Image (cartoon, rainbow, N blue to C red; front, side):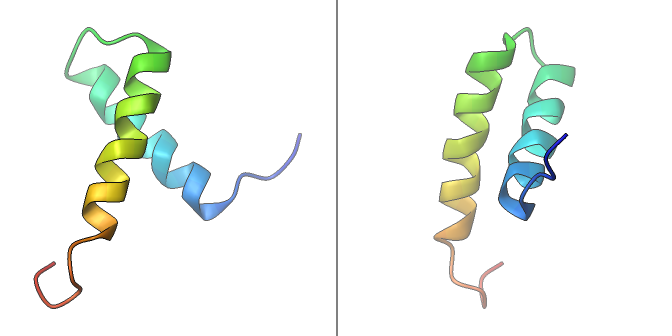
Length: 48
């Protein structure tokens, strides 16, 4: 089993939260997790 990159681990963590608090399927939750992480990563560090 290949090790997951830190990015993949972050996507999976967000996906799991989305799945826990919604009725999204795995693919939709994963796709949305990628968008959420991209949005968070574009927020300047001083604001985060």
